[in-house]
Length: 345
Ligand code: TRP
Image (cartoon, rainbow, N blue to C red; front, side, top):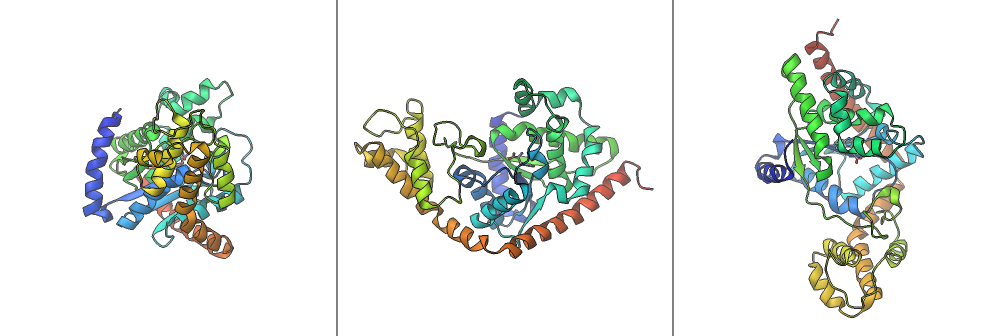
């Protein structure tokens, strides 16, 4: 298993190659449609997707509806959530003429790849995956789909021939599963799949308004679609500490520092400089600065989102077109896989 340091080193090499030969890369990435995306997504993954797209890399984005039911019994308003996730991506600057959006459930051949792929991994390997392990340790009964979802995720990447997967550190083990599946398939049945590589993204870890990691499910995030007033309210409710003076000290003052970091990534001003400017203004002044920075940063995105949200026909068409393209590619891949396995009759 490669270390983070190896992946970081490799990422630098890959970035250099992307700059000179963007057409040599195809990216697959995605999100679970469990609710609208938030500021952490934008500063981390969405901005990175837009950057790769604009550099000339072909991007595929899966709206991973089948993954929603890995660890919950109730999928919620899937149709509404798929729409929100799609809107967030388009508003962030992903262009449906260059980037392909699709949903798992609309691409049967992708899902069919799960069967041969499952034959290439052991149950012990699946149980060692950190996400699966954490779920098992949670004490709830674990679904078979939860146990096998890293392999389903391998199918997302491999069906479309992606050779690059932007990931945070925590997703490196998933990519290792994808690489093992590709390698073992090729060894057993002949060369079919490229072994995709991880592109580590330098994502600042933003804390939510309660001081814990910002997450859709924790209710502590600033949704991209929130109004400016809602944003102000959410930031006003954020946890700080009792010191009057604002300083940037992530170890000793995680909440205040995360707020400073949020304003910093939105404005490009270093957090220490912002802290100095706020000085003895207290948490009210800190929160005013952060609110202004976030609202300013998101204003163009929110404006595009508002325009697009009235265009239901356009949204439906974007997804229909993406699904058609994903199906054409998945059908081809499945045909190749069946031939390689001697299953074409
Ligand atoms: N598991 C990812 C998430 O929860 C979403 C996802 C589905 C994904 N398939 C993928 C990410 C393939 C990268 C590659 O956000």
